[in-house]
Image (tube, rainbow, N blue to C red; front, side, top):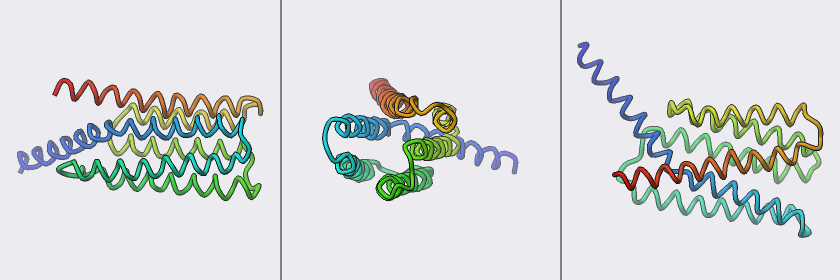
Length: 191
């Protein structure tokens, strides 16, 4: 009985490690969305109709993500045990932030401060939850950093809100995504 229990625990650990390894290959998604947000932010500063620019940029990122997910699922021989809960977390995040962005902002229900605080809290939740499911300290730390940025935005001076947003998008999405892509490249080269 003890041997069987140890084998089951070992199997569970292997499944968690496989899910973490597979998830690390989603760096492109972080880099894509972070770059899309930075591009939308830059264009919305210099062009008229910032809401339209954001809608186009985020829709393009959503379509690209959907295409890439379908491609990945078609080429992978099996789906990891953690894939569905992680997909649920990130889809829930995407729907929540879309509602806040495209309904809350135009209606005047949200200020820049409240939007950034909500965005950062949701990013913290999605990253922290993903890290807990995968038992991956790096993503838990990423989630914690998003929450710390939310606290900074909630209580800091008005002038740091935009800079905190830019810094978190760059570090928490683009750099994090590029790091994961580099790890994927190294892993594949050593495989």
